[in-house]
Length: 228
Ligand code: GLN
Picture 1 (cartoon, rainbow, N blue to C red):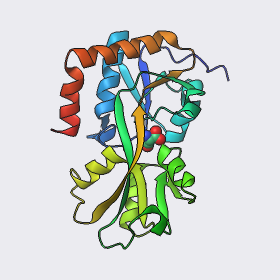
Picture 2: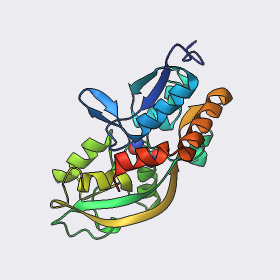
Picture 3: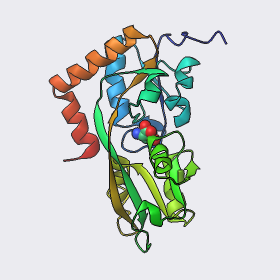
């Protein structure tokens, strides 16, 4: 209580949820990634240093971390959904994603329906998707715990954002062990989130994202974090 709307201090506080490589993950003791670099552009435009706060994803997606003043801005590969739009205000979209279905190379699972246990991350659209398909998934707090559960046979398959799964198969070199068995075309768009009604910061976020698209910074960062 009394914490609301007080996060505007000397720094711009960013809530994120690492590890979610390549959007946010720890490297040499600091959280880096595509989202972090974009948030840094926002901080620069706001004339403040960026302070990264790592919180559970469900505290981001339900808006509580922002409402409680733990941060001013959230960037965590957050899919814009109507339900979340009631809790937070979103920037314009900055990334497009879908869901991927992943299993172990030797598994007989070919689709969601074949799997006895499907792993998802708590508070995510992947969880919503699996429930919509009539299955009750096993929840994990973060993407690394979820990946480990698949690797150790705790679940038969998992549903996670496709760009993150792509990193596991390529950068983490797990394509010999795991296989992608489906791309679920959910047509998701990521946005950055601010507290409801924080129009000043929202304007700064949108202007920073627009400028990054126009001056080539977005493309440079995209190539840096996604290759190609
Ligand atoms: N894009 C997904 C969602 O918004 C997953 C985000 C995440 O796990 N960081 O639910």
